[in-house]
Image (cartoon, rainbow, N blue to C red; front, side, top):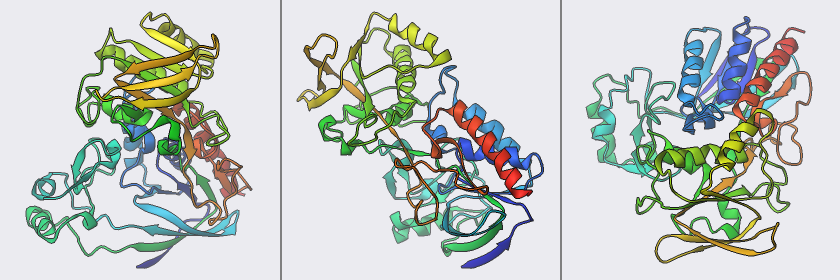
Length: 418
């Protein structure tokens, strides 16, 4: 299905509905700008929605996101399109023509999130929101605080009998199995790329043996394990056997600062691991923790956060890069590294190893869309109408993303009013 849609003169297109995209859209709309906000996922919030807590205050991200969702609901100048991606871009500053492609949700706006369809569904899939650590029904609300508050149906994963049961269970006529992909074209004056980031693929680092043992997880998997809405209800357990780990290790710069993977520092990893040490301390106050690092980067106000942890006598800090991880028969793993200070070879056996995987820009189709990027894939603001924000621009924490997004909104407004 194709739909031509003209926007009011000076409209802004924001690509990406994470914290950067939300902030950009709201800042622009609240000074009177018309905004299209598109997001490829069925929900807004991006990676922040998957976090357990922000650093350094260790408060839940649902609080900050909920405030933004309320602002979004109260602003009629923002038109939100989830499950939507940019297919093509033509034109120039002040006059872009953008083709958008929306995938079918198979659930319409009648949905009340009553859950009857999910109860009736007979099929399960690996839960992508929890990085495959548990199963979820093929029709579901992606997470507790999902916005829009509407279920999504993975039709391809359902048997016909399951689809029939789902249809019969919904008393609000919210199931539409005939939904099709929809293409629409919008005309806008400026485009803000706030496409966020993906965790670097840990399987590319063969020496770290991700996948060889359930005792090797990534930092984003750790966020979901610690979350009350995660696969274990917030209890940090080893995936696979749900054992309570008696010891932990963090592998910093897993893919970052490496010419064979990501040549840059991913900025957030040191603080993210220190935040996760606090998760562990809340549940396992006596557990020994080992941190393997190249350098510890906790700039400015984050120094106090680091100093508190470095005073913990049960945390061992080893300056050295992990060369190998060996899966043991008892479910544990042994990390092998060279201590760069002493020169000694170190072997540390732990029940759970957390890889601080790097931050990789998520806009895969940049060249096809005419978007300029640097050598690492981060989006460059290439002219008055093409602007980058947040982690699409550079590796950033949440605070820096919000600042970047506000600046992007200002640039987009200026470009749209020339």
